[in-house]
Length: 168
Image 1: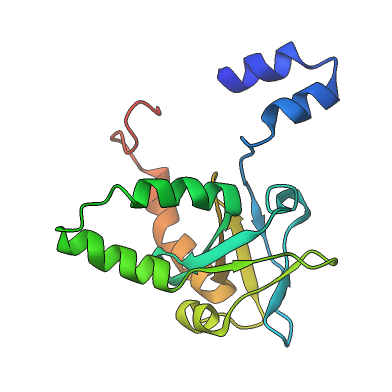
Image 2: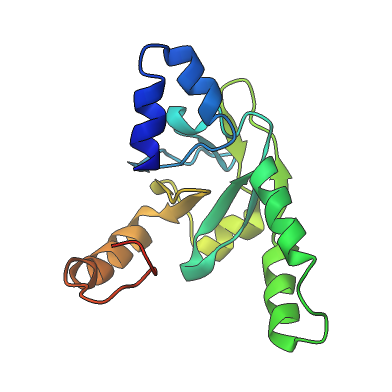
C-alpha cells in the first residue's frame, strides 16, 4: 500500500521517484553470475547503485555469504553495539558474524572479490546464485541454493499460519 502511494504520487516524474527511494532500495530477484579464477563476481546490475559506496561480506546462516551495503551494515553495527556482553549466545553470534566480515569495494567492472575464507565457508565454486532478500543480497553455491529451494518451497506454498506478524 505504501509503495503504491509513493509510486503513484511521483509517477509523472521518474527522477523524483528514483531520488525518493534512495537509501530505501530493496534488493530483489535471483541471478546466476559466475565466480572467476580470482574469486570475483560481477554483481547484478540492479544491485550496483545500492553497493556503489562499498559492500560488507560476511557469513550468513545456511552457509551462504551475506552482502550488505556499507550503509546497511553500519545500521546493523549500531544494533550490535546494543547486545548485552553478559549474554553468551550474543557473544558467540557476534564473534562468528563479525570475524568473517570483510569490507570491499566494487572495481570498475562492478566486480567484488569474495575472500577465500567466505568462499570456503559457503562452498562457493564457479556456479553461483545471488538472491536479493530486501536489505541484503546472499551469495550461494548454485547447488546449495537449488537444494535449499527444493527443500523449502513446498512448505512455503503450504504455509497456513502467520510467519511474519502482520504480513498476510
